[in-house]
Image 1: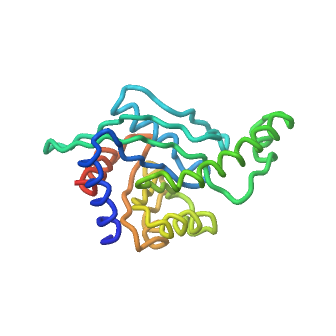
Image 2: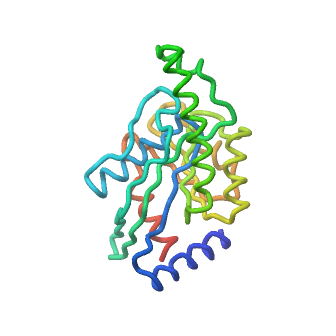
Length: 211
């Protein structure tokens, strides 16, 4: 937490030096965790426009989607402008058969698999450019996986500030405590990106850590 606050204070200081430089916040997580749903919720709330396609098919987002100049304001008058980045879902293996299971023809499925693999590489490269990250996990599933540990580990290695989100709290089998137990070193906020639950709290957390 101390390291996160220190990093964010440095970011804030740079804003005073160059007011034209917005903070880039990346939304990272495994496939189907709700990254694009969250990106759309934030973008719709703050700009009136959605920014990403949402689907039950894995890897619907296969390239980094960006929404620039998104202004977040708090109840006490503080505000910050961000560039919001919706990242492709991170996984160690993209299998075209996963697309076929959703009724997609084989040629199209193989093409999507290649695009998804390229998108993952792009998302990893963006770790050199983001200033902070929202890492979102599906709270109905066990978050302690090799992929998720790798995501968190890469962000920690680069000293990138992290806020972990336990998503899908609107579902009956949601268990946010599993996310807290898996990553106790980071603050965890419970949300439902689909229903907009606790999104205002998310805005407040972002403002608090950047002011």
